[in-house]
Image (cartoon, rainbow, N blue to C red):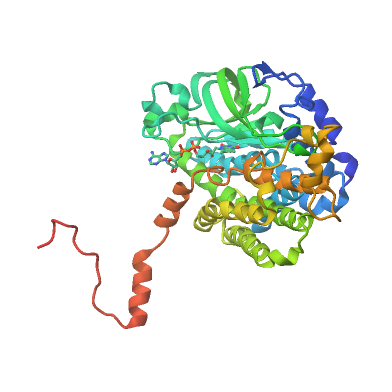
Length: 491
Ligand SMILES: Cc1cc2nc3c(=O)[nH]c(=O)nc-3n(C[C@H](O)[C@H](O)[C@H](O)COP(=O)(O)OP(=O)(O)OC[C@H]3O[C@@H](n4cnc5c(N)ncnc54)[C@H](O)[C@@H]3O)c2cc1C
């Protein structure tokens, strides 16, 4: 279908949206009045604003725009329901495109998208069981936002508190977002959700339960969508090691928020789950399947740019990129592994009767394990190629490099290859350093959940007995081969 560029939000309109919001984002001791220009948040906003620039370029239409299955209208892709493997693949391609342009996370087009796709099936199942109208509420919400080109954050990981205890056993119920009051016109929630990627840069936040809850933990089973600036919600920004000046500064930032809900009233039409405990585990299972299938697109998107940074560093150092070709191949192999395994998980997924499609959980969790493990190797190779200047903060600050008297003396030694300027070498080194120990260092270990959880799913879904039988049949073994009796229980 054809898309009219003018129909989609621009960077300036996005800025206006942010400026019209209540200032509920807290960092460095104050509430930020203008997220767009404040030095503490402008990198984050620049990152998310880039999507709106990309929307204006028709070359990105295939990836960033799609036909809504609800209205039939052309909408931004991250507001659509994913109904087939190809739709899931586009989820990955949106991320990869974004990473190629800004080198870091695209959460405003990621977690919220995934959350409402999960709720689409879960609400239909709950309504089928209890006669509730959650699904219709969700549809109405989606029909409304799909024309607004919003950024939507997704929050599902609870603050948790003591990891050895359940939500109901914590010293305070606030360690997980919970319902404190159910009223005719809505609910009141309290508690925190932490580390929510890019929430401050978003228009809306969708919260869904972060784990499987029991019957006596019903108050923690809650799903809803809220405007980011709703009364009763404060966002506390995380700190990210960023350099702030000249070529020391990378334009694009990555930041998470602590979401603090304090007597926050959510109108009924924005509530999509409230107490249906037996459905909380289903939601998290579907969320992680889709998220972990697509996470390889994020990592490979960043890994591609790391290869690019390596090429620039090699040349600025005076070497041909060819010197490092085997290291580039190693990096490309990692990128292809996690991207391809994610695509496989999408292809092997299943359609839910409600119409949405979910990736295969086992392959998706396997992908998460590889992502968590190999990200460090990508960074190591990138730094290895770049040299110490890119690794350990081994060259002076922009301010000193541009000092009228000392600058020229310093820059003489920042330059290596006489055909490449010292500034270019400085910029490529800062980018490499940013990937390795700055704001570009992404949360590929814990983002989207811990790798241990992913291993548990792979372990549970690996049919050892069936595989042993296959092996026995091929080897011609007919006797039963069983585990030895546990120590102390034998004859
Ligand atoms: C940069 C970043 C961005 C994020 N963005 C989002 C977002 O947008 N939305 C969102 O919802 N979440 C987000 N998260 C949160 C993320 O999902 C969590 O970090 C993740 O679920 C891991 O939880 P945790 O950090 O509390 O680690 P923990 O759960 O404390 O895990 C630490 C270690 O302890 C182990 N462990 C934990 N509990 C137990 C136990 N009971 N027994 C044995 N071992 C245990 C784990 O396996 C792991 O090895 C983000 C995280 C990061 C780092």
